[in-house]
Image (cartoon, rainbow, N blue to C red; front, top):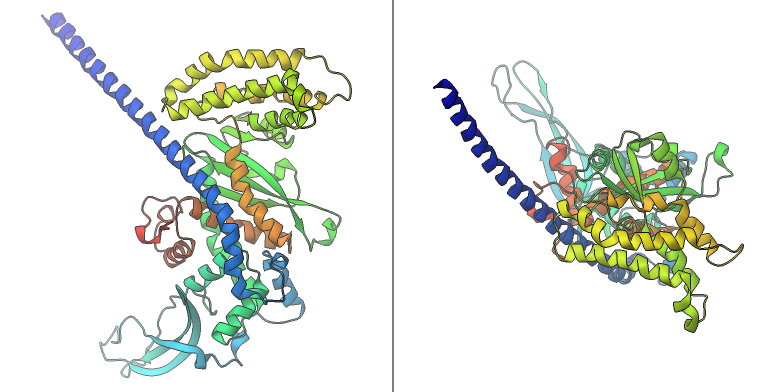
Length: 522
């Protein structure tokens, strides 16, 4: 009887297990569909931002005109002066900080006055009413949309007449001892790092608006303070990108000339800004990371414990990254590979193009891209992607392999470098057959690096290594906020107002708990 009961119990458990397995499978499919929808939405947003970027360049020209004299050329703008002008200030012995304005008539620019009192105006020991004993005034600059105003803050101290105890208000300032407020910092950062208006133009504009001589050196110092404040956000963004759910990071890099280098590095001609971007399946994060050299053990040190895939171009440094960390796999970009052959076709007479090996290779690679686009259009679940790739694309890969490895190479022929290039990275071009979240191109990173490249064309050089780091920290947060549809100035104000008061994870540009009021309407 006991055996019979046990068998019945086993059958019952098996039936329940089957039900649970069916439910789990249904949830898995639903989750994959949701991820597919997220991918499509992120890609659509990314495409729209790309189009917006083109329009933005024209808009920026109009926006910066109020800051520039009619006799000046707009293409003379320099963005990254932060560390450069700070050092220039220090050389001349000028002290940065609140005392810069000790001889300036700030009082005439005051719009509001705020009184700061202790939390309670009764003595904590005897409950006697406190008596005002003194007050100290300071000034801050506030920015309200379309308005810049000076506010006077009077910090008042009190004394208990009975026991003589003094009471002082606690400072609520994010940037104590300065005119800087969250709104003013956001205003400067937006105009400097998003619109590309240099400090010396902002200096003239603010001096005219406020009737206060706010120097470019002081603004540079303030942006250094802002960068330091934002550093925990920047580091958390890097950590989240390192631990992204899909295990995919897109990487690219661009050059940056640094005008004032330390003596030991005086002969260096170029430095680099590295871009690391999440896939469309994850939280949208863009990290811009400055390094003096291109040595991969320095530039990618933060990836030393990363376990996942890096989608990248043909930079040889990634080979060393992969060698040093066996948990990193590389997916090379098929768009880069195809470009090698399309460049060849440009130099061949049009009537001869279709008979060339280069043309046949370009057509086959194009078929790979068509299938990848088809999977997204048809909402193919992630769990089916690898199987579909194997069925649809392996025959194409086999045909390509014959052209790549069996084509006889004539020394100095047009096709020789292109064939050798693809042969050298062949294994890395095929990693996407092992991981469904991989893209076959690095378009995500290439598009993400463009805003920095565009701004670099405007500012041409960085003032110093430290200045470049300030720029990339602030730039990372601004761009990540932008791709998450946030209003940059509103987000920076919200972030600065709540740092240290709200959990950091709730302040990140991709947090689900951010208030709707700080999202962009565009």
